[in-house]
Amino acid sequence: MEVITFGETMVLFNPDSTGPLRYVHSFSKSIGGAESNVAIALSRLGHEAGWFSRLGNDEFGRYIKSVIRGEGVDISRVVEDREKSTGLLFKERFAHVDPNIYYYRKNSATSNLSVEDLDYEYIKKAKILHITGITLALSKSARETVYKAIEVAKEGNVLISFDPNIRLKLWRIEEARQVLLDVAKKVDIIFPGISEGELLLGIDDPNEIAKKFLEMGCKIVAVKLGKEGCYVASNNEEQFVKGYVVEKFEDTVGAGDGYAAGFLSGVLKKSSLKECAQLANGVGAMATLVRGDMEGFPTISQVMQFMGKEKHIDR
Image (cartoon, rainbow, N blue to C red; front, side, top):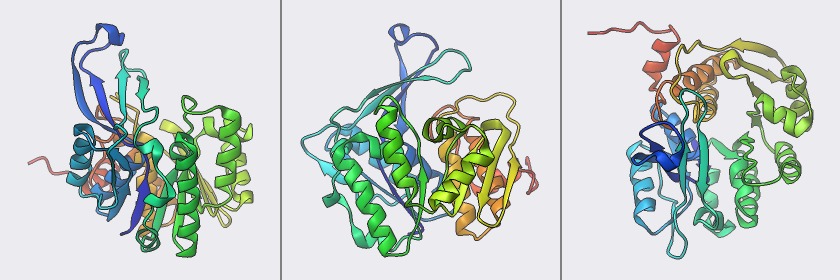
């Protein structure tokens, strides 16, 4: 397996019309979860990816497994919880602005994720372990699981990538800052956004954000700048990489996960830092073209055409 990741994926209900949810009467069902998004995006880009979690022994849990398995992602380490339910989330839309998100995940099956759910050998055989701050925020046991996974990955010389993915609906910033900065010292690649740089470091300058994380021990820092692109840095080089223009986006949720997957795809291919960033920008931009958290992730051929690196043939 090239990339292993784990965390909470929920059943997502997307409104079929805009406006307050009390006036919405029909929804489209799909799935939403940062870690499974990354795994699915990597699978579409042609990589072997595995995702695991705890899911309720219910129809929603079965639905999530069916969708993720259908995307070519290995789910063999998913644990069924016969006592807790699978989490849900609802989106609320107002024209073309970022949707409001309502979570129904308290005491969900995944919040009871524990160290006992880890398959150490499964992690050690991967090339990259990808983690996010969301799992760290779910519960004490989920946090302990992330820390143990990091320890196991280091024992196996597995590269560790980390998206802080701050969700202030899950924890207070004081606690988040302490935990996320501690984890940042243990990882190889980190994907902070400008807002996360401000919340964690009190800095909004991409160059300074990158410098701080490199000083903590990260080998690569990719600062996400939205439509502007990204600023990437290692101990040997640093540069701004321009983003791709999207005239009319449908949904920005999942763009950051697509960015991370694109970057990790480049790392797996041993591409240059700039090439990793370009691919990340391309996948992230394409994710915004389609409504849904993971529906817009492209194949490698599609993103190459989008980036102008391959010729598109209509018919």
